[in-house]
Image (cartoon, rainbow, N blue to C red; front, side, top):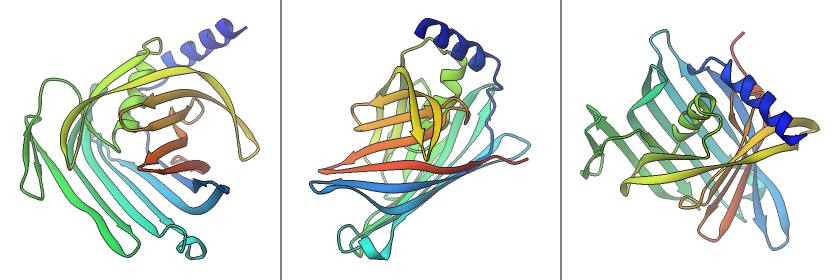
Length: 232
Protein backbone atom coordinates (compact mmCIF):
# COMPACT_ATOMS: atom_id res chain seq x y z
CA UNK A 1 0.00 0.00 0.00
CA UNK A 2 2.74 2.48 1.01
CA UNK A 3 4.85 1.53 -2.02
CA UNK A 4 1.89 2.30 -4.24
CA UNK A 5 1.32 5.62 -2.50
CA UNK A 6 4.95 6.65 -2.86
CA UNK A 7 4.87 5.71 -6.54
CA UNK A 8 1.88 8.02 -7.02
CA UNK A 9 3.67 10.79 -5.11
CA UNK A 10 6.81 10.42 -7.23
CA UNK A 11 4.80 10.54 -10.46
CA UNK A 12 2.99 13.63 -9.18
CA UNK A 13 6.25 15.36 -8.31
CA UNK A 14 7.88 14.40 -11.58
CA UNK A 15 5.24 16.18 -13.66
CA UNK A 16 5.37 19.40 -11.62
CA UNK A 17 6.92 22.55 -13.01
CA UNK A 18 10.12 23.12 -11.07
CA UNK A 19 10.17 26.91 -11.49
CA UNK A 20 9.40 29.07 -8.50
CA UNK A 21 5.70 29.67 -7.88
CA UNK A 22 4.71 32.89 -6.06
CA UNK A 23 2.58 32.46 -2.96
CA UNK A 24 1.45 33.99 0.31
CA UNK A 25 0.90 31.97 3.46
CA UNK A 26 -0.17 32.73 7.01
CA UNK A 27 0.85 30.61 9.98
CA UNK A 28 -0.10 30.36 13.62
CA UNK A 29 2.91 30.61 15.92
CA UNK A 30 3.03 28.20 18.87
CA UNK A 31 5.48 27.77 21.72
CA UNK A 32 5.92 24.62 23.82
CA UNK A 33 6.14 25.11 27.56
CA UNK A 34 6.01 22.76 30.58
CA UNK A 35 2.35 23.74 30.84
CA UNK A 36 1.52 22.78 27.25
CA UNK A 37 1.57 24.22 23.73
CA UNK A 38 0.20 27.72 23.30
CA UNK A 39 -0.74 29.79 20.27
CA UNK A 40 1.16 33.01 20.95
CA UNK A 41 1.24 34.82 17.61
CA UNK A 42 1.38 34.63 13.85
CA UNK A 43 3.72 34.65 10.85
CA UNK A 44 3.38 35.67 7.23
CA UNK A 45 5.41 34.28 4.29
CA UNK A 46 5.42 36.01 0.90
CA UNK A 47 7.21 34.89 -2.27
CA UNK A 48 7.23 37.29 -5.23
CA UNK A 49 8.72 36.22 -8.56
CA UNK A 50 8.97 38.45 -11.64
CA UNK A 51 9.05 37.46 -15.30
CA UNK A 52 12.85 37.14 -15.24
CA UNK A 53 12.71 34.66 -12.34
CA UNK A 54 14.08 37.12 -9.81
CA UNK A 55 12.51 36.43 -6.45
CA UNK A 56 11.98 38.32 -3.22
CA UNK A 57 11.06 36.05 -0.33
CA UNK A 58 10.03 37.58 3.00
CA UNK A 59 8.72 36.52 6.38
CA UNK A 60 7.32 38.46 9.30
CA UNK A 61 6.44 37.01 12.70
CA UNK A 62 5.37 38.43 16.04
CA UNK A 63 3.72 37.48 19.31
CA UNK A 64 0.34 38.86 20.28
CA UNK A 65 0.20 41.45 23.05
CA UNK A 66 -1.55 39.03 25.41
CA UNK A 67 1.47 36.68 25.36
CA UNK A 68 4.33 39.19 25.41
CA UNK A 69 4.84 38.72 29.13
CA UNK A 70 5.72 35.07 28.35
CA UNK A 71 7.69 35.68 25.16
CA UNK A 72 7.97 39.09 23.50
CA UNK A 73 9.21 38.54 19.95
CA UNK A 74 9.05 40.11 16.52
CA UNK A 75 11.18 39.40 13.50
CA UNK A 76 11.51 39.66 9.75
CA UNK A 77 13.65 38.03 7.07
CA UNK A 78 14.28 38.83 3.43
CA UNK A 79 15.95 36.69 0.78
CA UNK A 80 16.60 37.98 -2.74
CA UNK A 81 17.93 35.98 -5.65
CA UNK A 82 17.42 34.41 -9.04
CA UNK A 83 16.28 31.02 -10.30
CA UNK A 84 18.19 29.75 -13.34
CA UNK A 85 17.50 26.33 -14.88
CA UNK A 86 16.13 24.97 -11.63
CA UNK A 87 18.95 26.31 -9.46
CA UNK A 88 18.74 29.14 -6.95
CA UNK A 89 21.34 31.89 -7.03
CA UNK A 90 21.15 33.89 -3.81
CA UNK A 91 22.26 37.52 -3.86
CA UNK A 92 21.09 39.00 -0.54
CA UNK A 93 19.75 37.93 2.85
CA UNK A 94 18.75 40.01 5.87
CA UNK A 95 17.39 39.36 9.36
CA UNK A 96 16.00 41.59 12.07
CA UNK A 97 14.85 40.16 15.39
CA UNK A 98 13.66 41.81 18.58
CA UNK A 99 13.22 39.89 21.83
CA UNK A 100 11.88 41.51 24.99
CA UNK A 101 12.39 45.02 23.67
CA UNK A 102 16.04 44.45 22.66
CA UNK A 103 17.44 43.96 19.16
CA UNK A 104 18.98 40.48 19.05
CA UNK A 105 19.76 40.26 15.34
CA UNK A 106 20.08 42.96 12.72
CA UNK A 107 22.28 42.18 9.73
CA UNK A 108 22.39 41.77 5.99
CA UNK A 109 24.57 39.57 3.80
CA UNK A 110 25.40 40.30 0.16
CA UNK A 111 26.63 37.50 -2.12
CA UNK A 112 29.04 38.66 -4.84
CA UNK A 113 29.44 36.62 -8.04
CA UNK A 114 28.69 33.42 -6.12
CA UNK A 115 32.24 33.61 -4.74
CA UNK A 116 32.06 35.73 -1.62
CA UNK A 117 29.53 36.60 1.08
CA UNK A 118 29.95 39.98 2.77
CA UNK A 119 28.15 40.82 6.01
CA UNK A 120 26.87 44.28 6.85
CA UNK A 121 29.02 43.93 9.98
CA UNK A 122 32.16 43.82 7.84
CA UNK A 123 32.86 40.09 7.80
CA UNK A 124 33.65 38.30 4.54
CA UNK A 125 33.54 34.59 3.69
CA UNK A 126 34.60 32.62 0.64
CA UNK A 127 31.94 30.42 -0.94
CA UNK A 128 32.95 26.92 -2.02
CA UNK A 129 31.52 25.08 -5.03
CA UNK A 130 27.95 23.94 -4.49
CA UNK A 131 24.51 25.41 -3.92
CA UNK A 132 24.44 28.43 -1.60
CA UNK A 133 21.24 29.29 0.28
CA UNK A 134 20.25 31.16 3.41
CA UNK A 135 18.00 30.05 6.26
CA UNK A 136 14.97 31.30 4.33
CA UNK A 137 15.69 30.40 0.71
CA UNK A 138 16.53 26.84 1.79
CA UNK A 139 12.74 26.24 1.82
CA UNK A 140 12.66 27.10 -1.90
CA UNK A 141 15.72 25.00 -2.66
CA UNK A 142 14.26 21.95 -0.93
CA UNK A 143 10.96 22.35 -2.78
CA UNK A 144 12.69 22.48 -6.16
CA UNK A 145 15.29 19.78 -5.48
CA UNK A 146 12.90 17.22 -4.00
CA UNK A 147 10.64 17.65 -7.02
CA UNK A 148 13.59 17.08 -9.35
CA UNK A 149 15.00 14.18 -7.30
CA UNK A 150 12.06 12.57 -5.46
CA UNK A 151 14.02 9.45 -4.49
CA UNK A 152 16.96 11.33 -2.95
CA UNK A 153 17.07 11.19 0.85
CA UNK A 154 19.82 13.70 1.63
CA UNK A 155 20.48 17.21 0.35
CA UNK A 156 23.55 19.25 1.26
CA UNK A 157 23.61 23.04 0.99
CA UNK A 158 25.97 25.81 1.94
CA UNK A 159 23.88 27.90 4.31
CA UNK A 160 24.94 31.47 5.07
CA UNK A 161 24.07 33.47 8.17
CA UNK A 162 25.76 36.01 10.46
CA UNK A 163 28.26 33.37 11.64
CA UNK A 164 29.50 32.47 8.15
CA UNK A 165 28.96 29.78 5.55
CA UNK A 166 28.45 26.17 6.62
CA UNK A 167 27.59 22.94 4.82
CA UNK A 168 24.38 21.54 6.31
CA UNK A 169 22.59 18.26 5.63
CA UNK A 170 18.82 18.01 5.19
CA UNK A 171 17.36 14.53 5.46
CA UNK A 172 14.14 13.55 3.71
CA UNK A 173 12.00 11.23 5.81
CA UNK A 174 8.86 9.34 4.94
CA UNK A 175 5.38 10.32 3.93
CA UNK A 176 3.06 11.73 6.59
CA UNK A 177 -0.65 12.49 6.42
CA UNK A 178 -1.23 15.51 8.65
CA UNK A 179 -4.43 17.13 9.78
CA UNK A 180 -3.91 20.89 9.45
CA UNK A 181 -6.93 22.93 10.52
CA UNK A 182 -9.29 20.04 9.76
CA UNK A 183 -7.73 19.45 6.32
CA UNK A 184 -5.83 16.25 5.62
CA UNK A 185 -2.59 16.97 3.79
CA UNK A 186 -0.04 14.63 2.28
CA UNK A 187 3.39 15.79 3.34
CA UNK A 188 7.05 14.85 3.17
CA UNK A 189 9.12 15.21 6.34
CA UNK A 190 12.52 16.90 6.22
CA UNK A 191 14.85 17.58 9.12
CA UNK A 192 18.17 19.34 9.67
CA UNK A 193 19.76 18.25 12.97
CA UNK A 194 22.33 21.08 12.97
CA UNK A 195 19.60 23.73 12.80
CA UNK A 196 17.26 21.76 15.10
CA UNK A 197 14.70 22.22 12.34
CA UNK A 198 11.95 19.88 11.16
CA UNK A 199 9.69 20.63 8.18
CA UNK A 200 6.54 19.06 6.79
CA UNK A 201 6.33 19.91 3.08
CA UNK A 202 2.89 19.73 1.49
CA UNK A 203 2.54 17.94 -1.85
CA UNK A 204 -0.56 20.02 -2.58
CA UNK A 205 1.28 23.29 -1.90
CA UNK A 206 4.29 22.83 -4.20
CA UNK A 207 6.31 21.30 -1.35
CA UNK A 208 6.23 24.44 0.74
CA UNK A 209 6.15 23.92 4.52
CA UNK A 210 2.81 23.56 6.26
CA UNK A 211 4.41 22.73 9.60
CA UNK A 212 7.75 24.10 10.86
CA UNK A 213 9.29 22.99 14.14
CA UNK A 214 12.35 24.96 15.34
CA UNK A 215 14.23 24.82 18.60
CA UNK A 216 16.02 28.03 19.60
CA UNK A 217 18.09 27.44 22.70
CA UNK A 218 15.71 25.94 25.25
CA UNK A 219 12.55 27.13 23.50
CA UNK A 220 10.62 25.10 20.93
CA UNK A 221 8.54 26.97 18.37
CA UNK A 222 6.00 25.61 15.89
CA UNK A 223 4.56 27.31 12.83
CA UNK A 224 1.31 25.76 11.60
CA UNK A 225 -0.25 26.74 8.28
CA UNK A 226 -3.48 28.73 8.50
CA UNK A 227 -4.03 29.67 4.83
CA UNK A 228 -2.11 29.48 1.55
CA UNK A 229 -2.75 31.43 -1.66
CA UNK A 230 -1.14 31.48 -5.09
CA UNK A 231 -1.83 34.10 -7.79
CA UNK A 232 -4.80 33.20 -9.96
